[in-house]
Image (cartoon, rainbow, N blue to C red):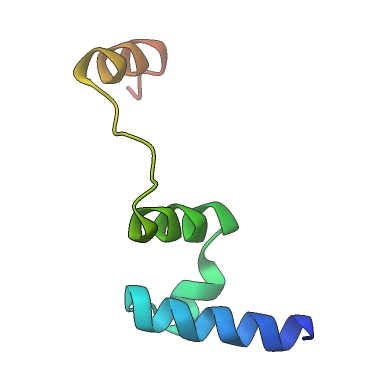
Length: 63
């Protein structure tokens, strides 16, 4: 299967599974698409706990 065929298939699957239009698919990073696929498969990482969120906010303040 060529890249174009694979990309068209992935775009179609993202549209069906996530409601993405072509612009959303082509604007997404592979990491964003992978995160959604993991969530649908049920093997996404556990969300951060409150202590981790507080530590990240302290280390990376946004102003």
